[in-house]
Every structure is written in C-alpha cells, then in structure tokens.
Image 1 (tube, helix red, strand yellow):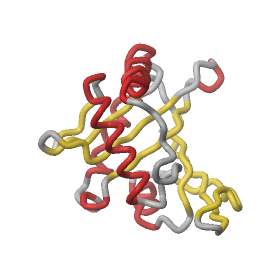
Image 2 (cartoon, one colour; image 1 turned 135 degrees about the horizontal axis):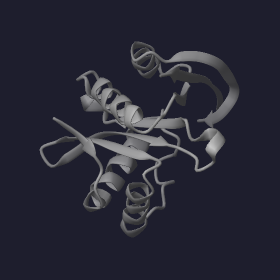
Image 3 (tube, rainbow, N blue to C red; image 1 turned 135 degrees about the vertical axis):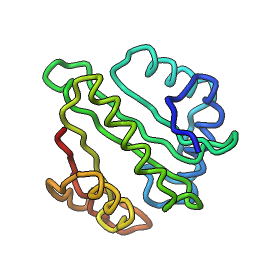
Amino acid sequence: MTIREIRVTDAKNFLELRKNLDTESKFMMLEPNERKTTIELEAKYIEDVLKNKLSLILVSEIGNELVGYLSANRENFMRMRHSAYIVTGIVKNYIGHGIGTKLFVELENWCKLNDIHRLELTVMCHNFVAVALYKKMGFEIEGIKKHSLLIDGQYVDEYYMAKLL
C-alpha cells in the first residue's frame, strides 16, 4: 500500500473511487449517482489543488487501484489559513487495514510544513468506526450538529470534531 499526494493523472480513478464510496457507504455526503463531476472537471479540480498549495489530497493506492483518500481544504483568508477541513473515505473492504491512520500521519507531516494549527471535520454520530479513528488520531468532539443530514427519511446528527496541532 502506498500513501501519496494525488496527481492529475489520477482524475479518472479518483472520480471512480468517490462514486464507489457514494454508492457503498451511507456515511459519505452524496447519494449514489448524485456526483455529476466529469473526468475533465475532476482533473481541473486536482490541478487547482496542486497549484494553489493551500489544500491537499492524499490517496491510498494498492496496485493500480485507489482504495482511500483524505482531503484537507483551507480557505485563502488569512484569519482561517491556519485551519484545514478534512474529508476522508476508505473503500469498505479496506477499512481496518491501517489506511486511515497512515493518511492522518501523512496529513500531519504536511501540516507541519504548512503552518496548520487546527484540523476539523464533521462525522455522523453513529459512524462508530470513523469516530474511533478520529479519537485515536487525537481529535476531540467539540459539539453536535443536530439533524444535520437527512438520510433515508431520517434526520442524522453529526459531531463537530477538531484537533489542535
């Protein structure tokens, strides 16, 4: 398994990974078939991330297959540049293989080089595996976002979680 920064040439595989995660997990933001991004738009998005140096996308690769990712997005505003918002997803068959831990370790290495002091994310309160990973990596629950999402006709709460570096 390799953890590395994304490349523009990963656009097709990255889009397939995210569409797969949308389909196999109810813990991702988008519903199946809701992601309308094209390979060209995905490549442009990756190119912009690589060019602006404010944000990061890490991928986990096994063979030629992308099986997980972590993105850290920062705003361009000076008052918020010390903070990054995290999104992560790992293919179901690879959960529990240490991929999440390795992605977060690489993220923290990048944070040290980029003067990032705060990492933050939201996670569905009933996503026990993800919450356990985030706590293991030093994140703390800062609050609850009540009825944040509507999934299968049910309102779902999310935790606000953060880690200060």
